[in-house]
Length: 202
Image 1 (cartoon, rainbow, N blue to C red):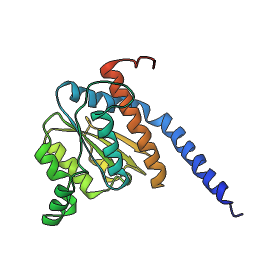
Image 2: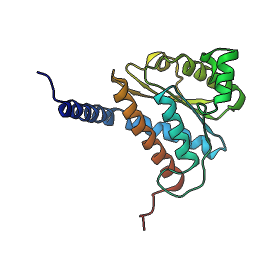
Image 3: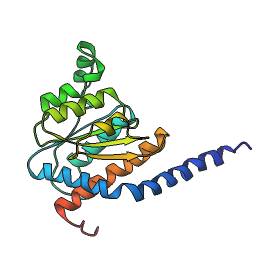
């Protein structure tokens, strides 16, 4: 039976709710670990670097914007950099070297021991994100990885002190929807751990 257009759209809502409910049971503890990892770095004067491709690039920028600007409260600025935003750096590296190193070269230039890398890849197999994780490990950085499906190669290469937030679904749109929710949950948890309960809005 062919669905009407409105029914087809409704299926997106149903599927998204189902995946988010599944991840509600799977990911809160690991997300708390990720937030604590980020807060430890921030409290030690370190920063968070973020990277990803396409929609994941947008998520990396979204995360950095929430930390540097604000999430839901007025508070001090928090140091975060999206490695997806400087078109001159990205195109120079891609043209002079290869696309696979557009993030890793930035990490070698900007990353310090104790920093955190937020690495986002819905497949878990993005070559440039994998290279970024290698560079982060070489620089003594911890990694928070947002992936999908079975976690891919990224899920296999993380160290015990890293945190994997994997969305076990095959559809990219659903994975990205949960990634955005995880980013918002991370931002809230970071603010809570650093600044306590948010006062009631006046």
